[in-house]
Image (cartoon, rainbow, N blue to C red):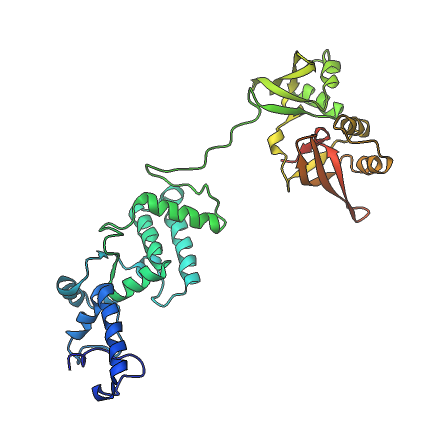
Length: 356
């Protein structure tokens, strides 16, 4: 009779105590002890008069506040009491995982302190609510006991750093970017990309002499040293100084083994080697003669057919398929829109300029 007050599993309800066979009773007692270990839910149901007990177990958050308070004082397991996560996210208790994700993303974006001047407490509550509901075990524990964790969560829920890390990861996975901003102390944001050009970094000088001349005029250079600048077109150098006033860059280039020269270029005449990557877009040098010179300098053998292909690609934009830094070449896929065809060919990196 001690089990007469427990809500029987489906298939046993209404069958009566006498219908419980020995094996079924053992299994029922084992289930009862599991519920007891989760959060002392069984004693709550056991000691509740049958006239007040619902047909199926109700989660503590669905009880009246006075009844829930009494249960907490007498029978609650030592878990951490938490606010109702369903209410925090604005979803129903039977919401699916996808519905919970969508609600969390909407709430986190709307309440984030840095973006929309939302309240920090509300924002943290959203993070705590999602941390509970995304985990099936924690969600089931809350549904049964109204608490989460027997010490793992702590009385105050997850730390702000843990919540921010969780929300940042969720934002990254859902297209918001890993650098979604967070305020407060202890934040760890992605380091800002270092500017280019800056002293000490490598740079490519454009292979197209006409492009170098345009950059020189934009930086208000005279034509006195245009011939010297043109001599090093398509050369890899090192930035030694930057003048932001006229957007000019001093580049150190090797003249011969053991000898180097420094020449000022307009900043539009150089580009960052780090900007060249597989999948990126690049523009092929417009000057066919410079294109062929760069190919020979990179060790690409004279091949009339391939040289003809490269020449047809002059001035066009292509997609980088592969990069070989050993001989400073890159394989491009270039689409000829007029002919409706595409070609794949190796080019000297010196003859390319990344499209930003």
